[in-house]
Image 1 (cartoon, helix red, strand yellow):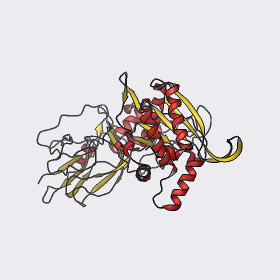
Image 2 (tube, rainbow, N blue to C red):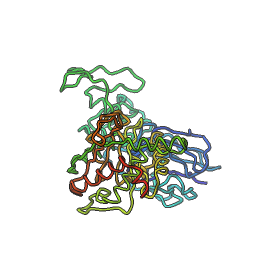
Image 3 (tube, rainbow, N blue to C red):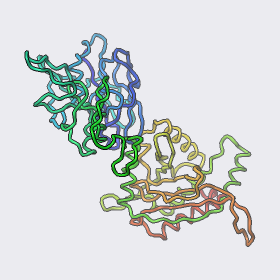
Image 4 (tube, rainbow, N blue to C red):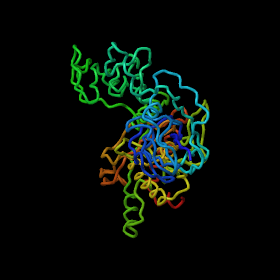
Length: 469
């Protein structure tokens, strides 16, 4: 049987690539269909990629930290009796690309993933055996040298090229699109960067060193002497030492882009109100005393009130697209969840059809999935309205940023004891603050205020509202 090459599939939501975080298998290991073989991080989530093929791992196309484009080889698997693994030169050819070079056309007859895929790799895409896409890759012709292979010996009497110096007449080599992207975003050209890898290979550390103004240390060798001038670790603008440089990528980059786009494109307005939540706290406490295992959290009750409010004020459950206001038949309720990878917003799909108990179960499930880095792109990008409980951080209010391209976000502050006037008498009550940020293109203050007042009244008199839900 021929070798089967599994291409990185389309992970959904328009993503064009993923960073390889960790291999879960090694060359020579036996794998079965749908066995996870790698962990990759996209701009949306950290996911395990299962193999659609069974057999022996013949080749791993990339190393941890590499960015692999959709449609490029991820792993090659040999079935029983398959040919031996490709030579290192051929492997290098598959994993290295010339900077700025136009990729050669695929040759006929090259394995393109074959058939027999499971069709069940991840939700949202298929395998070559199903409906997914796979691109052909080119095998170097016999007798030809492959990029990344050992350089031929120099002719007699000629000095050998220095290590880390690209050969004349050839474009520099790069290992992954990430290297080119780092250089492009830093205003550098790849051909201006001296690669310290084998045969002049330009590595990530070379780009980062060029951005910092100091040469990179060759692999396995001593660090190069710093260039004269300002200290390599000194910021030219402030004169302070640079403690660390962290590339903006993955989830953090996606959040930054979404927040920037929200502030740039959405003319937002904000309304807020203080709310007496004493009755809601007491209601939940009484339910918990009767059934401690199945009592929803306060956020689930507030979510239920928000959904009822959106049914009355559907303008806030919409978005602007191509000059049109698009309203939805139902609500996918997003909620902010703090994780080790940053702030994520998983959404409860079809939230309008769930009770407070159903919402509570989904909030707990999706929070655990997001914190484990297992949330799917669909779970992180399908929301139509966002609820943000920043009260868990001990703050009262926040000028939240709308989760683009949604139309509004409701924030809930901490619930604290405050003096409150009840029937003309001063009393200590459980008070929270609600803050609604909305897209002023979609609705006016009357609609936003009406929605906010409805949710506030529901919190202050929950029994009356829940009786109608």
